[in-house]
Amino acid sequence: MPCALILLAAGASTRMGRPKQLLPMYGGRPLLRQVAESALIEPVSHVVVVLGANAVEIAPCLAGLPVRLVVNAGWAEGMGSSLRCGMDALLATAPAVHSVIVALADQPDILTGHVAKLIEAQRTTGRTIVASECDGVRGPPVLFAAKHFPALRTLQGDAGARALLKAHAIEVATVTLAAARDLDTPADFAAYLEKNAPRIAQIDADK
Image (cartoon, rainbow, N blue to C red; front, side, top):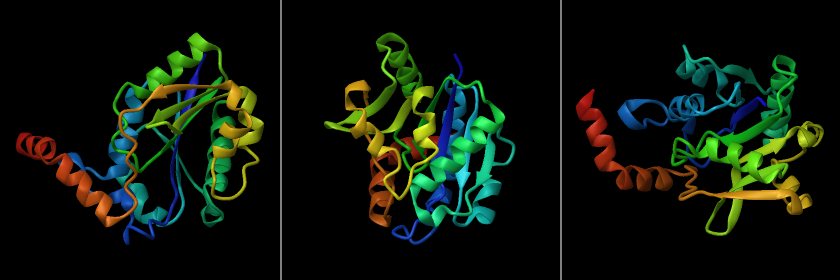
């Protein structure tokens, strides 16, 4: 059954001091484009990208990609608002979608193939939620079966879908995620560049 993916990229990046969606990554590609391209490789039927703050500046980095781009005018309300916006856009486009994966645009360490593992775990376990787990902490990317769509469309505040993981803990399966680094601050970005310097240098050399 078709599974879609919603990529949340609506935040104002206040701690970073500039739009982190545009941080230069491998080969100089903006962070958001890199994550979106990775999502498009996965076995998902649709990719919806939710922008909010600085949308006019950020949107061009996705030019040419087959994603559904939506702008959440109420992004300042918190992640719940952006997820509601993404769900509404998705179901207006693909009402028959069977499940959705919620992912964040500031997690560049999500390896290709991880989304496929979430989908496979849902198929084999029959659980209605499949979360990524790193160092004992459950978080995004998270797969939600259609049973949870109504709840996803009524989320409030900045907690995103975290409340659903707690409320339906018995229904949650997990897939191990080796690293769950979020790029929230300049120090986070500097550490990421240092850790990945050899890989970045090789990609730049091959350009």
